[in-house]
Length: 98
Image 1 (cartoon, one colour):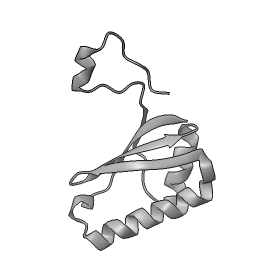
Image 2: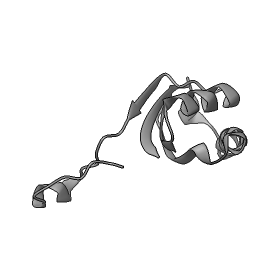
Image 3: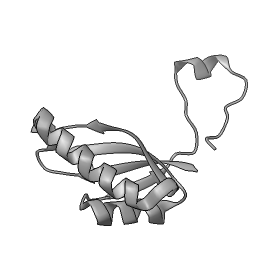
């Protein structure tokens, strides 16, 4: 599966309560269950008005289907091509994300 970052514009999402985040996660999980093994939610970063979600998926279309089923926007879907961090400076080669 490929790794993707999905940017979702959701006004006010960052001011959600713990219960609100539980509801959001439950809605996503319900859509994921319908899609089976073609997609996996890894985690999401929440800001004031956006979420940046990390997903593993067969392709971009299954991410769009998840957005449709869940009712969450998928304003921008970007495939991750590699991962770097501070230790990358000590390597002689950088691996591409599978």
